[in-house]
Length: 97
Image (cartoon, rainbow, N blue to C red; front, top):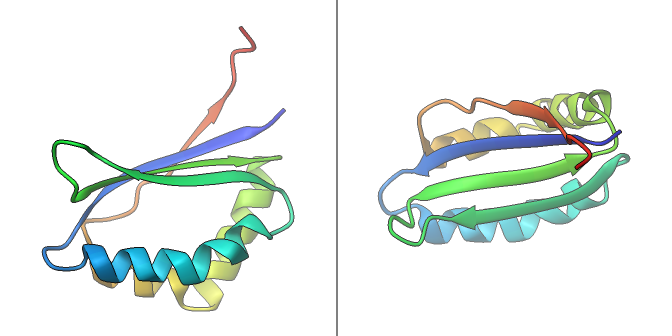
């Protein structure tokens, strides 16, 4: 069963364009990582500084391996400099309905 990983965050003022560029550079590595099914990054229509990550992985363990790699390479710290607040990952299973 796939694992859905979701987190919502706020982009610091003046960082939206830099964040978009960062995603353009980094998301191919996410999409190509073993176990990734899909990743989508969207922003709120009423408040574009609100960003939502919607990721699907073949398992939570695959995501955790991916996250460890991103921590080791410094990508998580880079991302954190552009965000206002902590990253709080939430993990979901499909109900199958």
